[in-house]
Amino acid sequence: MQPTPVNRIVIVGGGTAGWMAAAALSKVLPRGSSIRLVESEAIGTVGVGEATIPMIKLFNQALELDEADFLRRTKGSFKLGIEFVDWGRRGDSYIHGFGKLGQDLGLVPFHHYWLKLNPGAAPGDFDPFSINTAAARAMKFMPATSDRPNSPLADIGYAYHFDAGLYAAYLREYAQARGVERIEGRVVDTRLRGDDGFVDSVTLDGGREVAGELFIDCSGFRGLLIEEALKTGYVDWTHWLPCDRAVAVQCETRAGFTPYTRSTARDAGWQWRIPLQHRVGNGYVFSSRFTSEDEATATLMANLEGEALTEPRTLRFATGKRRRFWNRNVVALGLASGFMEPLESTSIHLIQSAIARLTAFFPHAGFDPVDIEEYNAHCDFEFDRIRDFLIAHYHVTARDDTPFWNHVRTMAVPDTLRRKLDLFAASGRVFREHSELFAEASWIQVLLGQRLRPRGYHALVDALPEAEVRRHVESVGQVIANCVRAMPTHEAFIARHCAAPRAA
Image (cartoon, rainbow, N blue to C red; front, top):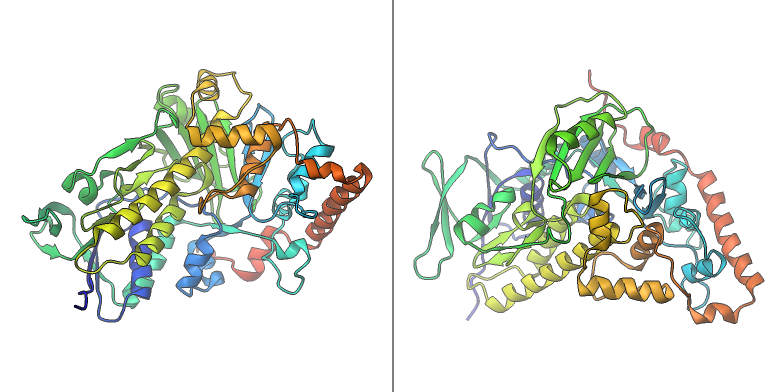
């Protein structure tokens, strides 16, 4: 028998998650599919996920969005990586850049040659050996070139900073033009089928019922469907990631138009800086066990580069994940699926990867449990490995100057992370497992930047004379420096290609 396709989809909640899902499904599903999105103008969105990682380009390309138009409409800027300030020790600074590290020699990764020559290096000393980090330090930007395949200019990886509210509005326009129906209203009840407990419909505050076959929960932390209706459960990771609050505010730009996000360690957490064309987004992610909301707000407001443009607002969260991301006929996206603090700008990526996974496992009306279990297994793996990467930033530190930093430095960590740290500490080796998000280059930059110095390096490095190793490393640094000098500034590139109209 021919399986019956699912063709009635209801998305509960708008914001970035809801409209990303609506836009993507309107692009990939066959004509005649019904996609309806329920949201209420009276319910605000979190709207602080304004920094991204390079995979967002694949999402935009799949929708066939024009990059320059997208950046103008969202007042966006380019992102080459993240600068971490005061994380290993006070006064430290390093950049976790996207893209390639150095130039491998034979079968041995570049960083092993660098380790041989720099056993006592400080955080940031590795920055000149990546085109991304070197360009970020110089405030330069250009996309990768295809006409010079052997040049570092062909290795530039980048993402974006943008106004999340404007991005949601941009995708809403895209989705509605492709037939997505937007329904204004607040969900007040969920009706389950009696035979299997699947969601049959949601009821809005005006009494309207919206029925569907597949429901996508983008309702934020509450999880109206995945949690309040289906009681899915939550895995809490605050014992490893104790930050449980964030206070956010926007301010004027006065400290330079950086092509990177900045994360500055504070006494009880860290402060973000995200530069857009018209303003800077700021926030302090902190642990309420180690500081109060009033103290955190005062710290944030005292460390703004320009005049505040909004009143500070506080968000409360518990880092972790749903026990099941897909339960019965409900798939949770965004904050409804779990929360990972935005230290490595993974919030929007987790929405994107879940949408891609949903299209790969898009169900027939029977909702085969084998497909659902596999979907959940992939989500679990992704969340767990991102969790480990975030924990490493806190745990691999020499800081013991505040109770917060002393706690995260000395706490026990997951076994999966401990194995990675032990292997790197022994020999500088990192291996990416399966399809985990952060590859070797990311781990190398962060662990070196956090002052984890390997006791050794790859044995084959010593097969070459030290003078040859030195020539190779110095040559790589010189070539990258020459390339950076030829690049335009970040500000000039945006002014030429994608400047947003100035407000009247």
